[in-house]
Image (cartoon, rainbow, N blue to C red; front, side):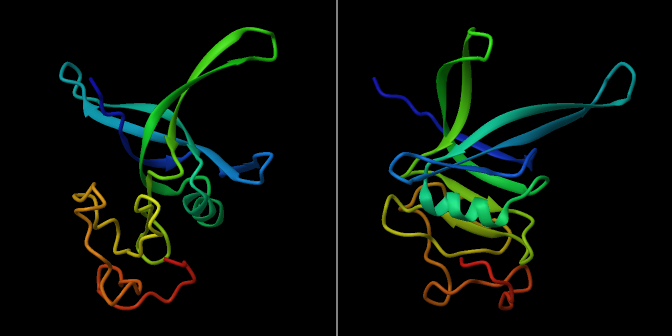
Length: 172
C-alpha cells in the first residue's frame, strides 16, 4: 500500500537561508521556519501561543536560488514539501535523529508572502520549468500541477492585489 507524505507550512523564517554545495556543485539551501498557533484559554480567558520550529531543506535548484536571493530572517513563506528523517552523530558522539521538511528536485512549492510586490510565487512543475505567478499566494487552492492555470499574459508576472504590473526585480 502506498501513502502520502506532504507537508504544507505557512510561517516565518527563523534565520537567513544557508547555502551549501554538493561535490557535484548542486546547491542545498536550509533554513528554519516558525509556525505559531494561538488560542484563548477557557479557564483564564488569557491568550496563549505555541510556536513550533521546522527545519527546511531545499534540493530544488530553482527554488533554492529564489530562497537564497529573496528570503531573510523574518520573511513570511508558504511552502509545500515532504517529511524526511535523517540520522547523524552529534559532536559528543551521540546518535541523533532529525526530521526535516524537504523540497525535492522534482517536487515542492515556495511562495513568498511578504515580498515587495505583495507576494510572489515559484513552483516546480514536475521538471517542466518554473512557474510564473504572483498576487499574494493566489494558488493555495490548487495543489496539483494538472490543476494549475498558466499565469495571465503568457507567463508575464501578474500584478498584486490591484492587478497592476510589478515594478520589482523578482524574476517570476
